[in-house]
Image 1: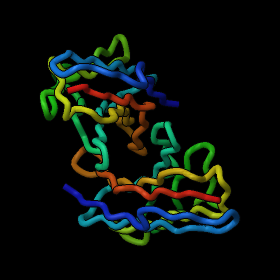
Image 2: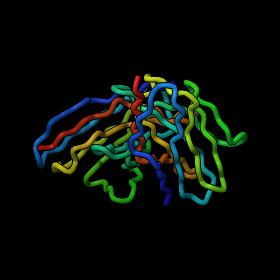
Image 3: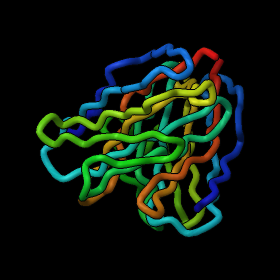
Length: 112
Length: 114
């Protein structure tokens, strides 16, 4: 089974700044996804991270706000840009392998 | 678009009680169905999955789920819960085509009293 390492595990950021979250998988996965889990809510899919090309975003999420990179099969980054308090959430990286999703421990982001 | 509905947001049970968590989805095509669990302080992990075949699937720790296609349901059950089952449970649906993205329900927080 894949192990996903995500960092930072938490951060407190000022309004208007940006934060980049890194996700490293210890083995190749076919697909990587980024989710957001807001307080008391479920996981919402932000985008599918595509290797070597632009990510595929879900409705309500745009590249300018959440630029994503995936330069190879085992690494991806998500940037939360121009942050506002509404971006406070847990951001989760996941990888698709062996018919199921593997998850990182998440990044708990608080925006002041 | 797909959606997943979980009927209960919070459930409190005593040990040895039976558990059933409801899950309904909306999608007209072929889907794969999952239950994920998040124990306190741990990552999300797979509890069980259904792809095809026997609609009654068994997962880890004595959990099972039944896929009823006509009702678009995939309810999770356990005959006798334990204190260690305290966790948050998420029903999830994945399209069997194209993007293979997985959509999650709102989650059910289960608290089992010892």
